[in-house]
Image 1 (cartoon, protein in one colour):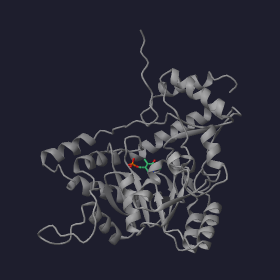
Image 2 (cartoon, rainbow, N blue to C red):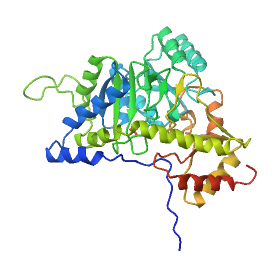
Image 3 (cartoon, rainbow, N blue to C red):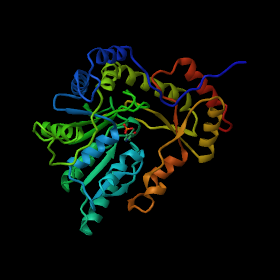
Length: 376
Ligand SMILES: *Cc1c(COP(=O)(O)O)cnc(C)c1O
């Protein structure tokens, strides 16, 4: 009997040198949340992002967002404006801080935070003496958000932006790397992301003092003393030197992975855009997306589900777009400024298999299945 191999949405893809760096960690006994791989990985990311980026590698992207909110002084009772169309990890750290999320809908050009709704929300909250403490904007699926507009509004009202670039390492906005478009950016190296350390993340800032503070907080906030002295509440959020070794190997193939993911997008687009019932998100001027996941928008929930089921029957994983946070049971009572954009995307959109390790045989198999959909 022929067994079909499962095709995943986005699976880890090692480049080759990862094992060498991990072996070095073992050979030198740097099995700790510090060591040459931690320093080396930070150096490599800094080199990639540009001269003014200071990087602290951490245990996860979620931890990086949590530390960013800490650094901004977000605390109990504060309100934080957050993109609704995202993964829950963008919003959860707001709750960790005892603060309250207020969700903002997306615009149709990038599927990210709408500058118009953002400003409406800020004015509303200021009028009610609840000036937001921070804004969390997300480059979803690798597509840069409208940073010029968002940053201008943030500056106008003097509210800091946390740039969730978990899905957008290798994406650029007018030539500037995503993750460096605001004072605090974050990356994720989870197993499904464009490069992975199995689990991990990073905080990025142009401000070296903030980087040092992030490292201090992420390593249990030990004051300078021979004994253990604490004047702050710390966290155990630093990245392991073993995992940073995987990261150093992955940095060697980041650009290759971006090219391969963009190639996947072009393959799907070339073969599917002739169908009126399927559309793709194009890059606005000045935007370069890493195309972390290729997403299609269909014309109905029923069609989206037909495609998903046809793929599933051949052991091919696909997934509806992110369910907006303001419609999640856990956040349903939160204030939100929405216009139906993200809800429509969730209803009709689908993420297709997008790994950089997909073979052309895999891509053909996925396409042939999609083409079996009746009434495409
Ligand atoms: C993956 C992801 C995160 C969280 O990163 P982890 O490393 O998994 O904690 C945050 N935001 C978005 C948009 C993500 O996709």
